[in-house]
Every structure is written in C-alpha cells, then in structure tokens.
Length: 334
Image (cartoon, rainbow, N blue to C red; front, side, top):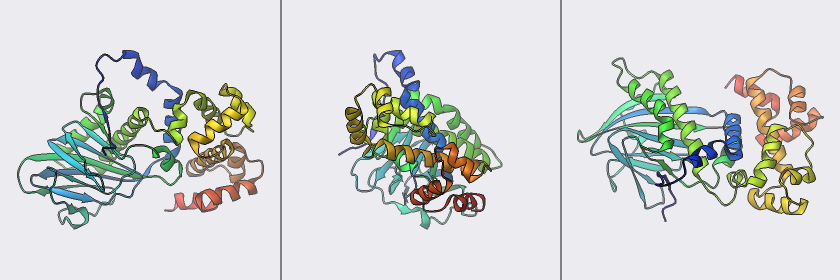
C-alpha cells in the first residue's frame, strides 16, 4: 500500500484555506515544538549523478530530505514496493529516515553509500561527490538531522513514511529561496561552502518538515491532538505556561469539555495523560534552557514548574538518561 502523501494543488480551493492553516493553533504548536527541538547532527550532501546510478542510504536518523535541483530520480523505501518519482523542484521528506535507495529509475541496483569511493569523507557534516555512468544528469541536495530530545520522535509519529512536496505548489514556493541558495552554491567555481550549504539545508529541512506536518492528518499521536481544536487549546496553554499548576478541570474548561470528556479525548489521541504530557513538555523546555543558557539548574527547574530542584533532577534523569548537569556538560563538550 502506498503510505506516502503528495502535496498537490487543489483546483477551486478557497484562497483563505492555506492562510488559515498557517495561523491555526496547530501551526503555533508545531512551531513551538520545532523551536524546542534544536536539530543537530547535520549532514548535507550535493550529489552530481549520471545514469545509470543507484545509491543505498542506511537511514536511522530523525528525518531526511531529498531536493531535486536538476533532472529526476526515484526513491524506494525499504519494505515498501512503491517508487516515488521526483522531478526538478520536488522535495521528498522522510520523517523517520528509514533505509531507502535513490536511483535514476525503478529497479536499479543500488550501491551502499559507504562503498562509494569518490565521496570525500574528511568533512563529517557536508560533502559533494560525482557518481554514475555518464548519462542523463541529476543533481540532488540531501540533508539529514538528529535531535536528542524525545520530542523529535513524538513530532513525526503518525506521519506517512514519505511526503512529497511538488514543484509549483505553495509548499515549495515557500522554500524556493533555500533551493535557489543551494543551486547558486553548486555553481560556484570555488566549490561548495559547508557553512552556506548548512544554512540552505537547515532552512529547507525545517520548512519542508513544517509543511509536511501542516498537511498531514494522523489519527493518533501528538499531531492528531494538535489538530483537534478542543485539545489544541489545552496544549497551547501548557506550552505557553509550563510552570503553571495545571489541573484537569482547568484544561477541560479551556477545551470547552467536561472533565471526563476531556480526559478521555486527550488520552485517546495522545496515549498519555495530560499530567504526563505536561511533564514531558517541561523537560523539553528545560533541556533547551540547559543547552542555550548559563542559568542555574535551580532557576531552570522553577521556570518549568518544579519547586524542588531534586525532584526536577530525578524526572530529568528518568526522561533523558542523564542528570541535568551531565546533559549541559555533554552539550558544551561533545
């Protein structure tokens, strides 16, 4: 079964629909979580490929993106029979970065990327290489990312295995500047700048993933709850005031539901209680503060709603596997 979602223009759709989605509570929640994630572990690659060619990618990171700068290709996901055909200007988002192959046509034998001798591996974050048999040319920008915090996996849970943003749609129009920057960089006679490529790939990835999240309609998981207008009100409140002592009754009032109806609806969508979710979100914010500030652990604990720093430290270790001071040290001295 084809589990991919393709972003296609809808003839006759109201012009306000897209704008409404951009300004919805769901869009705000997506932006908040993306901001908290602080993606890292970047890898960027410009590939100059000539038919016949096929490359096997191992996957295993949080998510990956392939943008076709020139030519065309097909993407085959492991254990899924359907091939995704991409043309110039198309962008494929793989929310869970499963093992996959990219090639010039379906059925092509793919060489594991680790076995391609022509790849310069001295720069662990960015590279550029040429590969293939000398025929029709394809140019790809590939980017993949990781994120330490569990919010990353929660964000992409329930999404299709691949989402294609087609050239000419509003989704791709918004990321056109990043694509143009990448194309311009590939044309530089002095070679690709890792810094510029990183910026282009970051923008491309975040915008493409954001659009994929806005377009998706999962039945369960974080995104399903964020898409429910009633539950989105409660999630937004917890996100805006993580230090507040939220009760089921207060969150139910915000959702215009009875206490019982709210709790049943929340647990059905999220597979966790509001209290568990609030603790999860508090620890995402705390991890972000530990990475980006020099505030004391006690101040950070209070900022996210823990009056007892020891209780905060225990909860943090249970969720992230290390104590807050160890987490900060690992970020400062990777």
